[in-house]
Length: 604
Image (cartoon, rainbow, N blue to C red; front, top):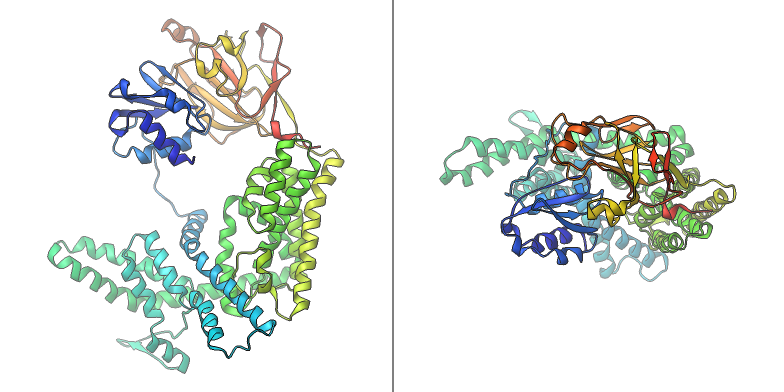
């Protein structure tokens, strides 16, 4: 089940949307208040995938998710639109930033990539038909296949206009008209014949806009503003349907042809030239740098930023030197994953690394990235080094891709320029990449390099140790959130039990990510999530990098206990297991409580 289906099942088991009065969440649980308790079926919720457990406290239905509760809370908010949540998230205004610009660009290009891939693979088929002598290129069937492979690229502005309309929330039909003006036969003929065109005395720049991205994208962006302007100005509904589209096109298309499209065309050329200049200046070292960073870029989604550059390469000079680096990335991930499978003694990791290594080999690298590379830095480093070396040799030997394809072993014909020789060069670089990726994890293991398997967790507060089984909360006593210990506090301050990064920061709880991948949850008191005043204060924020002994939370122990709160402090490892548990009954801040071990980090 995916997250949406899980949340749908939870809502249904709680009696449906109509039965939910309001909702909130804490560090590990979704919390619901219902109109009719009799309609809720907690046993049904307990059987849902990814649900750690359920409980009812103070008339509130609590669904234990774990430290990923924020993601499920967002989905609950989407599905319970109109139902008031206990806490409103503060959403700041979207500000301009390079990452936001990248997000806009990739969201527009991503929907049309399947069309490019289909066209690219069709070009590979056409190339094979000619190379193998099956067709001469004069046959009607070949001609149809050939122009079919060009359609997506020639009408690229139309495809971009369609996805831009969705992103900028403007009428799709009008958006296609804006892009269509750039490809109108009369205009294209004038451009091809070297003719000129003026609009009320203003000379129209004559460029060819087929196979371009930015002219149509910027034109639709302009249309979105013009359309919204007229839609607000014209109040009479009877004439709005006629005038708003008319005025929008009358203004947008001339401005696009006069200023916007030429600007976008110039920007495309500049970006392509800048990248070409970088390759010429740094040579193979540019491939080394790009290749080395590709696994990280793919992990964060930044690799999508290469798509516009690759398309501009193909439509500008007829080939791409970046697409081969993405092909080598898949082989680097495959090699590193399979090498990790050989090196590890963890049977679970061995199985995962083997299967994801194979999928990376055929062109799908994400499973290996997220299930192997993220959890083992030496596997990731192996893939990065291998990809960097592959990129170095790719630029050194001028490996090129002549069609926009999804880089995988089935796209080899797209790399053929001079017959067998270019293919042999590609295969040689691919083998180097794969072999380095495969050997490095084994070498790192033999040299004894590995993730730090265990990290000591010290007492965050002075007090008496009690086992989790004695905690008056089933979520912790049944170890639904992980194994650990509890402390009856004798102090008012919680200090960091180790170094790490804060991943959860609330007044009553702090989650800390450790260097070995484990996550420690420190939960102060039971049912203390409703304390929102000076009685309990968190001194850190999500994302903070903290050191052992740093102040995390302050609370008024005696006052809260007088008010009936159980102030038991719980410390659990939510990812992994604990070993070497403390034997003392009373602990100080310098005492070690236990050691954290991440189950799948046992690589040797």
